[in-house]
Length: 152
Picture 1 (spheres, helix red, strand yellow):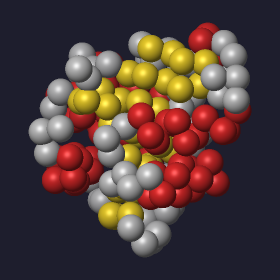
Picture 2 (tube, one colour):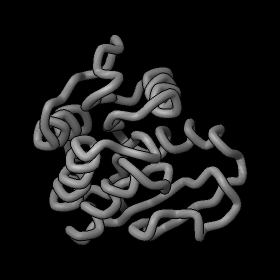
Picture 3 (spheres, one colour):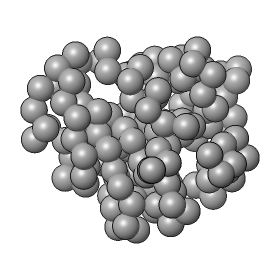
Picture 4 (cartoon, one colour):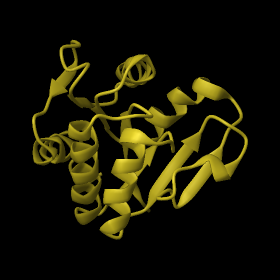
């Protein structure tokens, strides 16, 4: 069974956020985790690229109706046809949530994750939200994941 970690963030990303997400995806894959995300560009694509480059499985839960809308590094594309309503499904799929930058879509995903009792760490935009742990490096995010979910 795959151990899924949700990586959330903007469909467009700064170089700093993309670099962080890419490294995080790689670290997660190297530790035996799979990445689940919204399947789009930006942070999601960077995390999927890093994960794929390190032999990991990537899952994209897409807002549209076509699997072809996924970024090229998504191995399992799940079209939903429900637009941003799929944000709740994205965060429920993972054992923990790592947010990287992002805007209001990311904020909604953080809120859904916290409501569901999922552990959330954040690099960038939303790190001051109560219940969210600020991380400064991809390695710190990985340490957070391991601390929160252990071997589950």
